[in-house]
Each structure stands twice: as C-alpha cells, then as structure tokens.
Image (cartoon, rainbow over all chains, first blue to last red):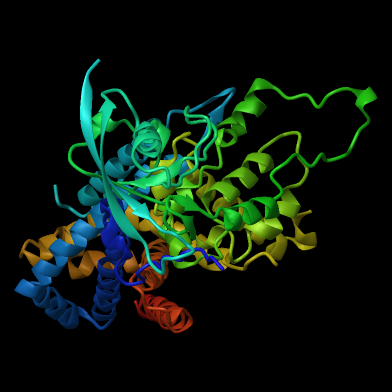
Length: 129
Length: 247
Length: 113
C-alpha cells in the first residue's frame, strides 16, 4: 500500500526558509516595539496627570542611555511599519475611476505625502521649528 | 545553438519503497534557451525514465508544472535555465503531500475551490429567450485581474499560514470567490461569504504577501484577501449594529 | 460553517495600524528629542497639560494610544503564533486584556487632567 509523503512545516523556524518570510517577520515584530512604546506613553500620561514634579521626573528618566536606545529601536520599528502599511494601501483599497484603476503607486504615494505633511505640521505645532 | 551543462538535484520519493524523500543528482546538456521543464524532459527521455512530474501545456497556461526551484515556487515551464548558476534544486510544491517524486496531491485545494462556489450564481435566473446578462467594460475590469488564476497552487506553496494552518481556505480559492463577488452579474456573494468570511477563511491570512510575489498570472491574491477582509468587516458591522441587519 | 466575529478584533487592528503609521513615528521623534535633552516646547508640562485639558485633545490622545495598543496587541498575537507558540487563546486573552487595561488607564489619567 503506497502512501503520500507528508512534509511537516517546522513551526518555530519556517521563516528562515526564504528572505521574504524574514521581511514579513520583521514587519510583525515591529508591533513589539510599537506596543512597548505605547505603554511608555501611558506612563507619560500617568506622570502628566500626577502633577508637574512627577512629569519633570519622567522627562529626566527619559534621558537614560537605555531609553535613548529604546527610542531608536521604536523609531526604526514605527518607520518600517509605516512604510509597509502605506505600500499595502494600494492592494487593500484599489480605486476604480470609470474603466481604469488608479495607479497603485499614486495611492501609496498620496499616503506618503499626507504622512510627511502631517508629521511636519505636528513637529511645527510642537515647536520643533 | 549554444548549449550548457545543467546540474540538478531532484527530489525523489517512491511511495512503494521509501519512507522519506532524497535528492538525486543529474547532469544533462541543454540548449541555452531551455526552461527547467525541458531539462526534466531530457532527463526522463535520455537518463532516467522513472522520474515523475506533471506538465501539460509548456506555456504557463495549464498550471500543472508547479514545483519548488531553489526554494521558490515556480512553473517549471516558465523558469529559464540561463537564470541559474550552479546546481538547481528541484522539489515538489511545499505544503502538499508528495505522491511520487515531484508529483503532489492537489485534493485539498480542489476541495476548497469547490466550497467557495467559483461560478456565476445569477441574482434571478432568466430564460435564454430574454437574452444575455450584459456588462459594461468597467464592470468587467473590476474583477478581470482575478479571473487570470490558473489554479497552479504556487500561492499555497508560498503561503506560510496555509502551511501552519492547513484548514485555511487559502489565497487562490478566496481570490476566486472575490472574483465572482465582484461580478455585476453575480448574486451569490451571501453564499460565498458563509465560507470565506468564516474562521478558516480570510481571517487566517496575516498578509504575508508571498502569494502575490509568486503568482505567475499576477492575480495579486494578497490584494484580493485584504479587500475581502474590509468588505467582510463592513458586513459584520451592518449585520450587528444596523437595525434589520442592514438588509 | 458560520461567519466569524473576527471583524471586532480586525477592524480596530486595521484602524490602529493606520494610526500607528501616521502618528507614531513623529511622536517617537518628539520624545526622542526629549530623551536627548532637547525637550520640544510642545512636550513641556504646561503645553501638554493644556492639550490634555481640552476635549478634542483628550479624544485625540485616547484615540491614538488605545488604537495603537490594540493594533500592536493583535499583531503580537499573530507573531507569537508565527514563532511557534501554539497557546493562541491564552496569548490572545493576555494581550487583548493588556491593551484594554492600557486604554482604561489612559482614559482615567486623561479624566484626571
């Protein structure tokens, strides 16, 4: 009696099989840093609600080397997330005008432009320049 | 005509005698413009008639010669030898049971394809005497891309979520359901949603995007699945939050 | 087979993914500046209190934090599965509860301001 050969997928190491899987896992792992950063924001808000002294202490604590390293990781993660997210918009939300579909790069490009503009406005409102 | 000596490590499995697969090394002289399928054909004709694989059209239309070539799901009739240096590793499509050598069992995919009802279900049947179901070019274009699927299963071999969760209905079947859902002549969306908006349907997809990268027909299954997620979410909110289920 | 209730989880995930993409990089940049010793004027105690004191500011802060937390929690759940952790229900409960707790804390702190 002949039987087909079943090849199991290695559940903890499958993503090493191909670079595209590693890129995918990198995108997914950004959630760890973004999530941790959001927890930091909750603590920032806690100190803000607790009064000026508490908030100033929070700002001082931010200046530790570990905090700076974490910020750099979180920034890289947030930027990678943003790029992959905007690139995906053209797949998830195609726009058909009349007969033709709007170019996918136009849809993603519009997101990048809006993102840059919004970021500049926020930096301006925050008094960075 | 220019020739080249091609070396291949080909996956072999004999279900009558083997408990595991192994690789067999072949060296064969090929024409420079040949594809991997040509090399396999020459091996079968001149070196080893016991080698098994599927193929039919040799022009990237029938979808039967899909295999892993250096770890990438490819149509072997569409993969040029001149693009490869060194030994080429040829394996059966991942995630599917191997019947023999490079031949895999497509039963799981075929069963899923049937479940999503990939055919037109008219809103109201009408007799032939009333004429054809008309459609504008814009209505055709809306779903045209998703009609290009040749059922080659490369997307299933590329999809890690299908490998990890074999119940997942998967890229091609959901894209084909989406193709009919997007068709102005169709009225079967509610029936298909019962299948593709289920837990084993589109929600197993985590948007790896590998399916679209390997699709030889440029169907963009990953795009189709994200569109299905958005549409299914809108359905859910209509059904649960609007009075009367949004009907 | 029945339609899944997954949209309850997925829709806020998608909304949160969009919020993260648009807002989080620039917010990280602002707190990074503070971490480097150059606290932007907008992060001073007075201006941040003023922002959190108005209704629109509260809504904005809550929206960004709650949706980003939820989105991260959901993606982290999928990531755990992808790394081979098969206790999906446990992972999901822990992460979603953590995200909900963070959102409730955010609301409580905002209402205190």
